[in-house]
Image: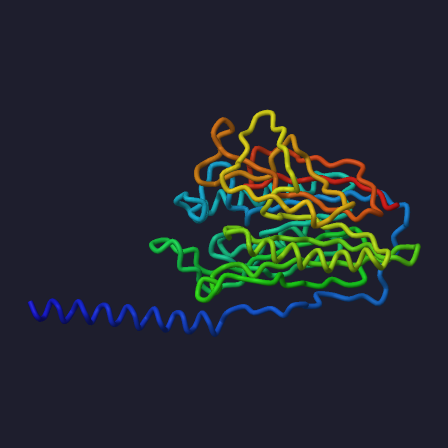
Length: 348
């Protein structure tokens, strides 16, 4: 009996020691980006007309792993990734859809993997870039973890993922801004380092067009998202005060202010709903399509009659920009747990 107790205690000690070493290494290897990181600059940027009509598309491609047949363990499901063939088919579908779009000037993409176990080490950035040889591209990490230990018996493992912006125009600069706040240690070691990417373009009237690709926090009690909105508000309003045009688009992980869904065939997710405070951006334009969901719950495979859906992907426009049209394209979540959102606007 004493030997059994001895071996049991020894096993516990070894387990605690291994886990401690794991946490120490994870802390040492933790990705800690600066508040601002310059991604690119140009001495010969393009020049945009001050009467230009612009077309944008925002899409969280969900690392090409959250297709309609998938569930996801973070949302209460069981799976981390689809099989390799499905992952490849999703990437091919995303790339083909992007290439099939017409007259898009800016693509704002989120959850683009470059070297992750969940997407079988595929460089999705390179795969997408290959289809747009004439576009300027930028990439910024917001998830760089050497090993995510969840779920315990089928861990997510290595994750390297981020935000990707493609543009027909040559930019002046592209800068990564770290959102304030994060999960406390040690959980923060294994979650995303949220950020947005600000890209500047010269305009003929000596102003600048500011295009921001954002991916705000999720799975928090709302306090992180509130901090992030206050931080974003300060920066973009400062740009507008200089006379610049400002566009913010991406996955906000919250609904537009006072959102009223008008879905025809889908169920609205009000269980964990959070709306952006309407006081943040008075006189600015929230551009979204209330008739079509942009995101679905991934607790189970997609079923139009049962799956809860919402709108968390949309755009924010400064008062000197005229909204012409916004539309969410329903792909029935065929390749991702998000649908792409299209926007047409005009500089005033």
